[in-house]
Image (cartoon, rainbow, N blue to C red; front, side, top):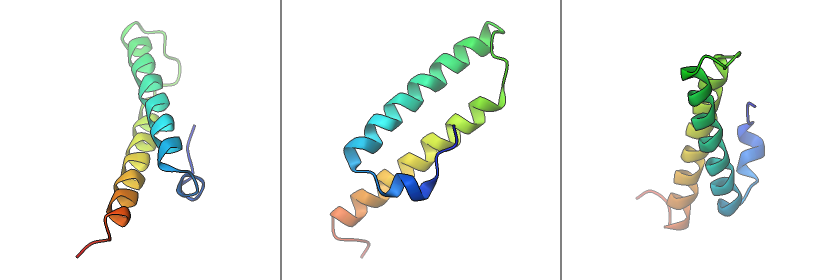
Length: 71
């Protein structure tokens, strides 16, 4: 579930926040599966974390641009 930055940049802030919420929920479920030894693909955790970080970075960029950029 690797999300491309190019595709994410085209989304609105609301869409990014929804995607972020969804990914955080998936990460929580994956962690629960890992703790109960039901998770088959442990690399999913890293992929989800990276996607979350990518979206948070884009949200921060959009917030800075909305405030008039960096001084």
